[in-house]
View 1 (cartoon, rainbow, N blue to C red):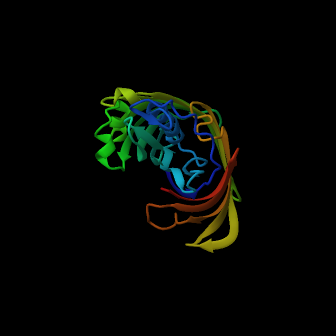
View 2: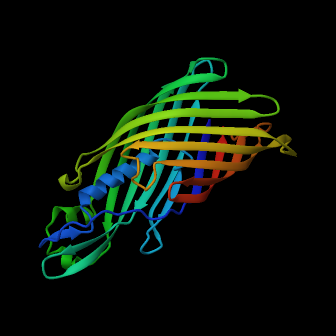
View 3: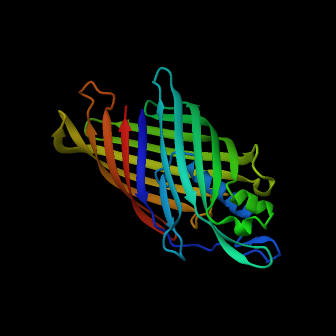
Length: 314
């Protein structure tokens, strides 16, 4: 069983934010709220599967230079055993999006700085069908649940005179969403005494939709479609610790995004190159058998950055 935690900084160049809505007596300027809510659901699609390329993102606002979007993900997956090859996976993710709107009641205008916090969780259950001793075909059923909550940090003087339903969402509103779909994966495990190779090729399709008491003004949907390749090479360094070899780790990952995930953050694919060390504690009677620390360089169109990942195996 493996669980991965990633803390990263991934600065990107800002991309176009869209054309402001036409002014009216009582409106929100700077983009329709529903369009922004759809965009948040599209952003949530990046957290629906375990993926080292998007496990943590931090995107700077071009006007302020401070993060306008941030995302962190904790996730992992494992197969119970060769004799009972039930596969289970799960991810928990948090993201923050800070759009700014301008409201007017016809007499005055005021900027409305908001903070949209998104929490989501995804689970998956699958089964390993052995093609060879080292290669398995793994279909997975996935389910997702999440919430977007809006925190409007501005005085109520103007808000009390504006009855726009969009503003009702901005002022401590929320949007609940669920998702369902699946993944197909090829998993190759090539282990030898002097080296180990892991590779996973995965295609994912998950549909997200708002539900429940979400205001009608921000009801929306999005589709997560992703094709990803992840590979890892491990080999002894010649050093020893805890009576076991210390291994160096080389990692390559590539993800291409389709559907509503494509372009929402300014790119359609990401590539990750990683290097790190792995400590083996399997000789001792503790639950953790291996611990890996990896530094990754992530890049794509208009995006680049460095991340640090920590993973443990049980």
